[in-house]
Length: 78
Image (tube, rainbow, N blue to C red):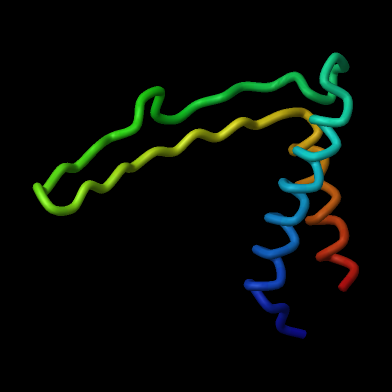
């Protein structure tokens, strides 16, 4: 039986979002412990009449890792 890769991607993305939300509900617990990485200041491309700002910051917490693991387990049972 072939499983859909998009379903796996969407489940993992949902696990990250729900895990991040749970981590933000409990800010002073071990669930919200994690690491942030990305661009500390955004890149700005100024073309005169058009200005484009690029920025990316990712915070990985214990709760989001638990959410990813739960999403993978749910995907295996689908």
